[in-house]
Length: 214
Image (cartoon, rainbow, N blue to C red; front, side, top):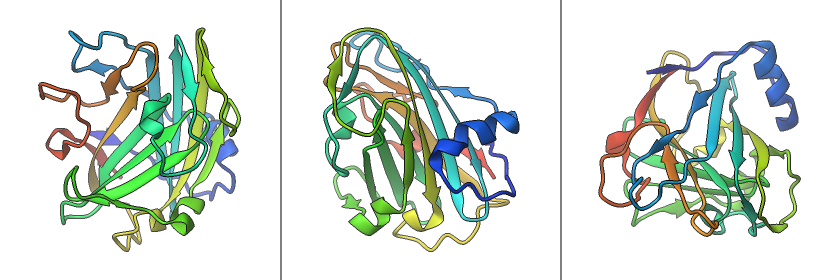
């Protein structure tokens, strides 16, 4: 179980998140389980950290990989084919889980549902409420075919959990997992924070989520 710290201040810009979490000494966690290493052995250096306040989750990812791809600049596109980090979570007790997927330039896909086949996508108002910062900028650039380091930070308001009315998280335990993928990179990969015991790559598997204690 990972303990998520509460911060009292309201962070107004996503670009402030790395500095705020540095000042509070919030440690990084690794996304390093190559669950399908026989077919996808490549394992870039990926880590994340999270905090929360009375209105939002604060997410910060750092990545080092041998090539970077950023083709999708419009939200709710196929960002998982780019250099992509992801946060899947079940914020309530009804089994509905959210898939938040973010490429290296802060383009987001957000969906919700009970399983992989029946997902509802967030509307533009909800997507627009998620503040993003990306160290590589926000414009698509195609591919960079040499080792690159990048970061993204997100302010995810509770209202972004659009199938629920989340008012507070303090004292709750939320099941979740964090991922790194890049389906169309020169070295496709599928990494997770918590291990996944399935034969083929699949992140839509809440039975393997870990726990976040708020």
